[in-house]
Image (tube, rainbow, N blue to C red; front, side, top):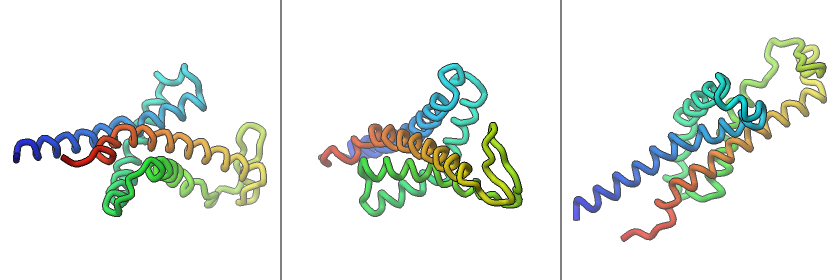
Amino acid sequence: MRGALQGKMNRALLYHISGFFIAPPIGALTWVLLNGGVSEIFGGIAAWAVVVSWVISVVIGIPAYLLLKANGCITFRSLTLGGAIISVAPWLLLSFPGSTTRSVVGQTIIIENGSYTTAGLLYQAEFLLGFGFCGAVSGVVFWLIVRQLVTRPSN
């Protein structure tokens, strides 16, 4: 009896570790594909994106998951929405102009006189929506991995 219980606990831990190891890079690589194409998958930006996704997962994702789990809210919707929010949050916090007085991307003025232009706000919204989509992809992948723990009845 004790061995069977320990085996279930080990399996549950393996699902969680696998989920936190696999899901974030899937979202990061989705971002690389959407922004750079297939040729960038084996480039430095992909490696950087994967590492950043793991860091964000450890710093924000694991505590968020534990909070959801403690409240009994591990669902497809909560993990998908949670993945999107977790992916967007750091970039949203880093996107305040601060002391930047002017920023131009291509020929589009993003920040002028320390404030976002209308084009800049649209650029930021599109950028953040892209991150949110990729975070949602990670959330779906995480759900696909851990759903066995949530949907299977206890024996």
